[in-house]
Length: 338
Ligand code: TXA
Ligand code: MG
Picture: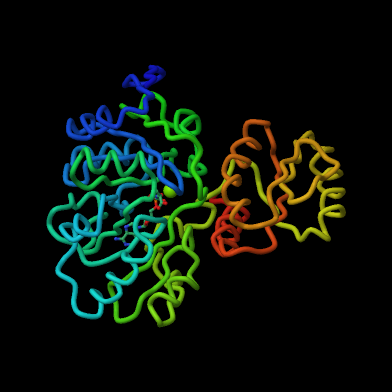
């Protein structure tokens, strides 16, 4: 049981593995960063409007973006949702039964328990039971719902270690529960059960094909139209460096021209690849998407720390999490707002 303090902002941030300390902070309306199997979350009591507003402030995130509410079980989740109709109940039971605890967020009509600020004033709520022993212990000790976006400053890459959380939020969060590096590495899949058919709002830790198998029906992409999830905003998952995606076969030629153009102007070119490349700085990630996902955000943060201005990225070639990884890489490579 090691507890250390770090300073640098308005509050003294305590790094610990003591979930009771985290639960007490949540009860006091304070912010607690906690590990999940996907990425670290920035938690607040989801029924406390003051605590929820503090989440937006700490992240620098525009108010109005709905937060995921984390709970310990399906039974607890039911307190946060409106009584489902028969079709929603069938889908909910199937998905929660198969994937909870796990990297799946389910959007349903909400009850009055949640602070409206936590759901951006919407009539719906995104609920998730995370599959991480520290997260589950925290949720059980706290006993309620924990509103938790990823524990990064707005616009930065999601944190997959406690050190990433501190880099962004030291002095802005009361407690950081350190549970080591996260296992999945990309955020949860978000499925919307509000309408007549299930919709995919964000690809993530559960492949959409598995949702379709369990539901026995298609789960079409619900991402077109209104940007209902902030992860839909282009460049939401971006490092500081600009990003270019390339096929492995094109890496050598793209790299040669990037070195010539960018290097001449004094810029630092970096590479994320799936095989060793004769260039520094470079990061080699597994070619399989699950392994790639686990290491991607740490590599993007390392590239920023190394002063990389332009990052040439080879995506993974296969694996069930390919959609989720390509989604994040495409957003990282999208044009940035001016
Ligand atoms: O894996 C994850 O989902 C991580 C961990 C911490 O659980 N959390 C996460 O939270 O990625 P965040 O806030 O960075 O992304 C949550 C996404 C946002 O895109 C948000 O718009 C969407 O969930 N969301 C939450 N509630 C929603 C709702 N009621 N309707 C539609 N989208 C919702
Ligand atoms: Mg996020």
